Amino acid sequence: MTDGANAALVEVLLRHADDNTILGQRLGEYISSAPELEEDLAIANGALDHIGVAMHLYEYAAEIAGGDASVDGYSMRRNEREFTNALIVEQPNTDFAHIVARSFLFGVYQKLLWEQLSRSSDERLAGIAARALKEATYHVTHARRWVVRLGDGTPESHARMQTAIDEMWRFTSELFEQPDIDSVLIESGVVFDITRERAKWDAAVDDALEEATLVRPEDPYQATGGRLGRHTEHLGHLLAEMQWLQRTYPGASW
Amino acid sequence: MKATLPTVEEVKRLLDAVVDPEIPVMTIADMGILRDVTVSDTGAVTVGMTPTYSGCPALTVIEEDIVAELKGAGIEDVTVEVRHFPAWTTEWLTPEGKKKLAGFGIAPPDSVLAIVPEVLCPQCSSSGTAKVSEFGSTACKSLWVCTSCGEPFDYFKAI
Image (cartoon, rainbow over all chains, first blue to last red; front, side, top):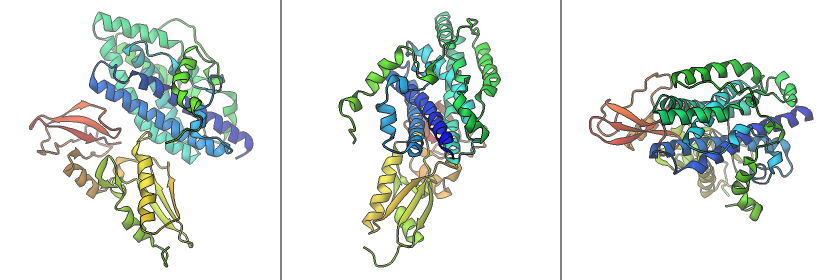
């Protein structure tokens, strides 16, 4: 591959790795606070899947980038502005309905993404995506079940589920943005045009909202900037906690 | 240092001692994660393995165990290569491995193509079983209960 294509691939790998790192950390924060023990297990399983995917993507990025690039360097010693995760994954947990809404809206996107990337002309990326796809299928099935159970539940659970969907909604269009740098990789079949998946996302989300007796939000406002490193106030706080050990003792290892 | 180079078969036999740390009755060959073994002209051994779940913490332990096992047999030059493609599937579990799982109290995975998996209770073999939770004590298992004998048990998810 050319230097340009390599640089683009590193960016793509970091983007998706960052999504998984931050969501994994967010889910991890909630373990022991879920409404039931099985749910704690489910959240912990999901968090572990996300962190595992992130690790494999960072590893690959570090190999291409060379030099002193490393998994720990990427995850634990980069600053807020260097993270290119989507804004939705850094949103605070707030309550269980917010966790469900975030996991569902993001999960449907991520499943479509892994479906695409499992056909990548880059075998290693295709393999990582194919495995992640199996895991994402579990995540989405699980989150969707909760969307319906809470949405079509009591007046209280319905109201809180609707509020959570409303508050997460503004971070969903960003998921279907395609940074310009990807074009060189789209030409070679390494990555694919994510904008084409938007209709499938809409259909899957609408279907769940309808079953859950929830309303698709009408507020047209959509936030953006995560892919360029411009984040909401929440990411900095998350990183401060997640990175403290490597910041305090740089290079510490087991 | 051994005088003669190890053969692929010898290395594979040695690797039969390397087990999944979370399911210690299963060797890495039983799990279907041991992909290939090569021995170079100079005696350098390369072991290819495929991770099960992305975040499986056993992966690092298994890598270390492979190196330790082979070094213990005098093979110094060992490289473990992680093969991400194609992705691991429970279809790669050996028939022997599935039997060991059931003997260990974990219901083995049905075919990934089964729409409704047939899950037999590993204690009493009843097919009257019900899923309690999609997610269990490790990434690869879900939590089930037998409606005949009442025992809760793990089911190795088919993926």
